[in-house]
Image 1 (tube, one colour):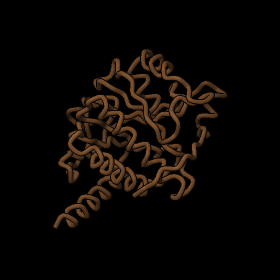
Image 2: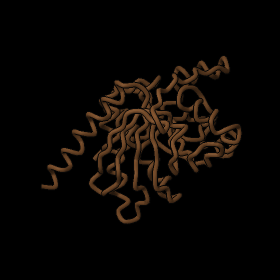
Image 3: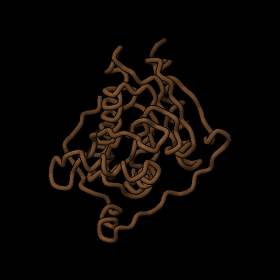
Length: 233
């Protein structure tokens, strides 16, 4: 079982750039098929929760909650974070600012999660979590797992039935994609298992940009669910 540690990276190089210049990098364009989605594969966690790996734009997801790969300040940024803030409207950053700082400049420490309304998004809620800047497996894996588990926990507390994740830490935070996919699936599965009958989440989606990242998550999902099926025999 993965154990959490208290290491908290303060900010990414991208955060420093944003702080100094006030600029952010817009997300790359998504390629949508009919219905606003690209390729998709469906699996099942052993608890019965549906697992969907798909290509698409997370800001258009018609689910109860989407997850934002935020920074510790929770005031917007680049990539997925910037895209979600733009789609949700200015109300989102004001709601984020209402979360108190737990220390100067930190509203959501790495590995934790906070929840706000979705405002202009199709999703009712946005779960904001902070993944780690990749250092090594020993330090980074527990923090990435904590980000997913914390997100599931706060979603369950709000009665969320369906939730869409991006590939947390797979962008400028530099987490190797195959390792990120493995940690992500294991962490979500563990969070669902721990909730037991109190689990409200019946569908988990990973909404990914790019064919390569999608293919890696699909391959990891195939291996993960095959292992679970074998263990039940």
